[in-house]
Image (cartoon, rainbow, N blue to C red):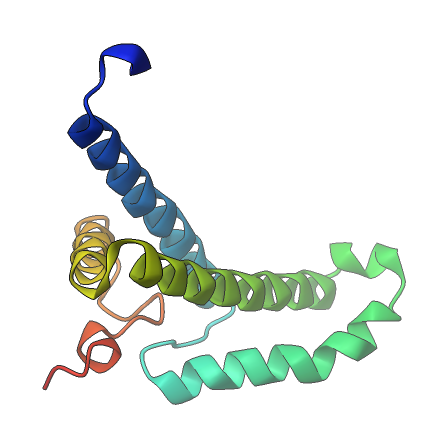
Length: 138
């Protein structure tokens, strides 16, 4: 449908669809990296450990020669850095979404993303998102 003929509602729906797709892609990559690194992200403390560990090792890795990226340790270091970056990006996106569309719509987006993750074979929490904790549900 050409943009000129789209209604305001169509444009809003398209925007929400893109928000969902963006989080699905990021969460899928986060879950795959966690699996490759043999990490669990099911608990907030585990996610914090990944974020803190990457920060602590970041300065040592910056001084390492570029050719180490092809070694198993270099690949793992690269994957940990990518995982940390994606976790930070996702938190920023979630905050932006809450400010842009509100808490209820963001909750629906995150639920949709979690359902997608389950449908494609990931167990809940594999990407480090706990909706009950995030929205203070018991």
